[in-house]
Length: 391
Image (tube, rainbow, N blue to C red; front, top):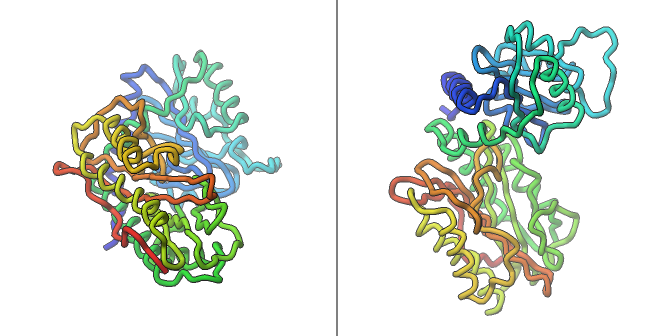
């Protein structure tokens, strides 16, 4: 049987959040999501909005409410683990239809009728950097009518719960990485000179769906030859040529959980300079995984990244790095950076996001794999050929 997040876990997440809200003196928490960034809502409801926006509103006591736009009622009712579902005009799609004649709720009606609140002292938003201005203003106005002051950034309340993964979550992440691994293997087998970047992406996508994935966990990319020195990108209709270094990113989503794998593939026989460039990414990954254990300061991982690449003579190719959290999004809190001030813990999950860009030659590569922190140390979630790949 395929892994899923249990109903009990969804309920437990709400209770844990309500406890953190009490500790933070937060009366209301609005978790916001859109189609591209569903994590703050899917974490509590399993609902992934399409076209419209979505929110989960949580009070310190009682059942949460899933908030959707006017058109998503039947979709949400068949998907959501939260039974109370309310439609608000502010959550409509961005073309802003008016929906005349349709009965809709409001933040005020939810606070009155669903939560039975008389007053609100303090309210916050998780997904603070995502929420639309229109929805934020309506929420702020409603909370203000109940006595609340400025709406605070409450991302940390949700992110702190998501940092340590449950057994259900780890099982879903392992399946997401199994799917991505199969997709990357298909790319390595079938990629050829004369294909376009988009055609190679099609190989990976077909395998993702064939293996039971929900789709891409982000709009992943395959970048070939000159112009591949892009840390974030999209596939183009550029044709792969002999002698190209191809930066391949493959990303799959399963039960909401994201996976990503990055591999450089050289189309031909690589010379010594190219081999050293490619091997640098794998060498630094190896050193990072070697020291990533419970109790290790995150900053130590970042320091090792810079130290190894400097020794290899590739530190000038660093854009950022070297590791970020992963889970419901490919990149989520916490990041591992030079300014990180926390220690690694068991059941944290990360990606080695090792990008090297040679802007002089206009080429780039990324070595990326997911891993989980166990009692013994870091264990990779992906299962794909590493090291020099020549085609």
